[in-house]
Image (cartoon, rainbow, N blue to C red; front, top):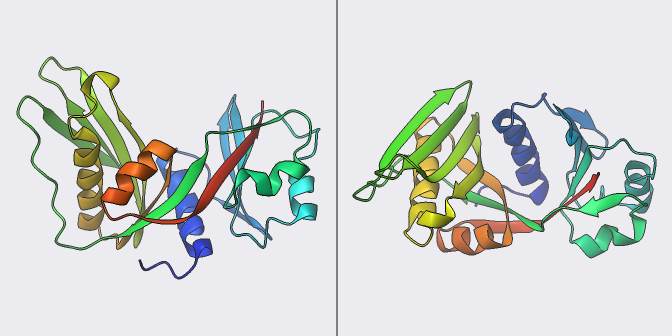
Length: 216
C-alpha cells in the first residue's frame, strides 16, 4: 500500500471519480472538495477527506434541511458517526468501503473464458471495458480513470445471468492491468459490501468506511 493516509486515498478517489463520471474538476474546500455533476438526481457532490473534517459544525452546515435536492455527501466515517446530525429529508446511500491496491508494471490482462469476447476503448483518460457473451449480451462491464500515478476503478457490474463464472475477477484484473499500462502506480475505489468481499481476495486494502447521504 503506497497511500500514506486515508486522506491521500480519498483525495485520489475523488479526483478519479470525477473523470470517470464526466463531472467537473473537484473544487478544493477547507474540509475536502465539491464536485459538480449536473444530473437531476445528482447535482453536486461534497467529499470530506478525513475524520477531522467530519466535525459537528461542518457536517451540520452541509446537512441543513434546506439543502438542494440532488446534493450528495461522502464521508470516510461509519453511518453512526454522522447520524446525530442528519436533518430532515436526507437519506443514506448503500454502505461502502474505500479500498486501494498497489499496481505493478508486470500486470497483464487475463485471458477471456471460452465463449466470451472482451472489448475496450479509451478516451480522455477513461478506459471502458465490456465482456460479452456469445450471443452478444453483456457479461460484465467496468471502467478505470487514470489521473497520473493513480487510477480509480468504477462501475463494475456483472449481469446476474453470468454471475459466479469468474467474470468479476476477470474484469478487476483487466482494469488493474490497463491502469498499470497507462502508468498508474496505485488504484483506488469505493466498494459495496459484495465488492469488498471480492476485492479483498484480490489483494485490495480497506482504508475506511465510505458513507454516502443524499437529499432526495
